[in-house]
Image 1 (cartoon, rainbow, N blue to C red):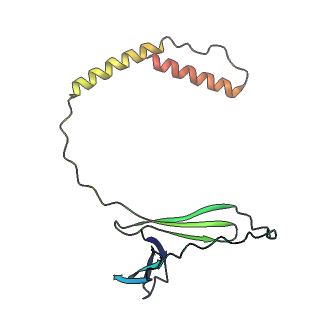
Image 2 (image 1 turned 120 degrees about the horizontal axis):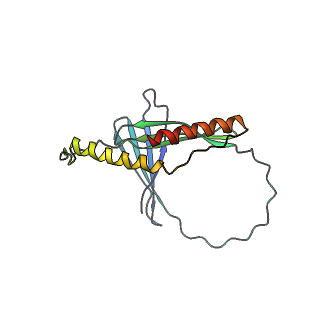
Image 3 (image 1 turned 180 degrees about the horizontal axis):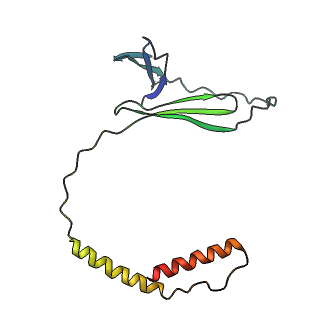
Length: 175
């Protein structure tokens, strides 16, 4: 069976260690276990708890009373994101102030990758690039000759200003 990670943080500003724990479900009848390892200022606990035997079916209970109205839930808020060094464990701190759930994420950045090899020089010379641009621009300018200007003025001042600017653009593209 796979361990289930669980994290508990104590005051990490003084000499208190950081506690990390994991729970492993054992087969029914196996003895409970616990192991501890220390890495720096972090204590790692692994608890092994045996699964209980399957119980018999219980009696059906009647309906319970209606519970009180809970507080309104307005929104979830991300209070911050901290970038950790590569290899550190990601963590999420969560709190609830009565109307908002607050999240603070701690996420490790990845290891830097190896630098790639220098690529081959480009195949286009400056002269080829200039010739290609001149040909493209000549064709583009010719395409705008088929676009007409807006000749009828508009009564609305904002629309008229827009019409004049559109005509300026069309005429500039024809050059």
